[in-house]
Length: 243
Image (cartoon, rainbow, N blue to C red; front, side):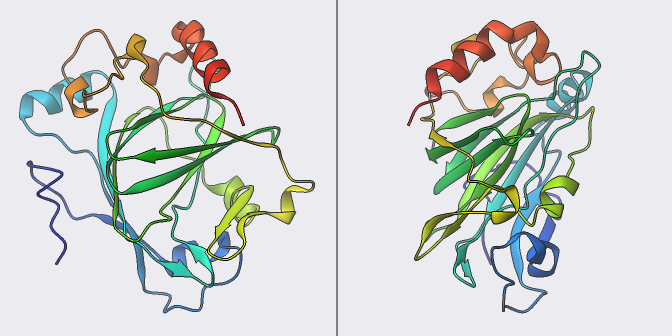
């Protein structure tokens, strides 16, 4: 049995599980594996102390951990289903932030208007901000488990319908062919590579884990009020968007 103790010292609830049956529509080709095969595990609403839980609830935040075992399904690497975030009361979509705890990840981000795709390769210790307006899929292209944490607002529910209707994100990552454009999006959308970098303005600094931000008073407002951080978001997107 896989042990999560290396990555989480607190109590772990039973995880939510995505199976091949849940994901069949978003792969490049229909998987041939048993539909009941688990693809990844989601441990949601985690906290180490009751004080931390109270702080997270007061700030409308949730800390989660997801484990994605390695695998290839009809030629495509294991991934999450993918989703978008709705707009907050100010009219700007909610962001999200991830931290790779173990393994290697490809974060595939795409604008909801299908004008831009961003690829973020991330190793253990890297943090990745999902900016407002981008849907996202996480891919495990390695041979070991990918374990990642995320912090996100509790004021919305993720929206899976659009990516499901498009049979996946704008690109699939295949073992033999590499990146393959999803033909349902029409002409391939330009893809740019972004490298993870610290964003000290919101507390994302080298050597500081996401959970270290729980209880801090100078960070994480961006998760619910991104409109107050437009200068940070603008600099982040402009500086990191490159081939």
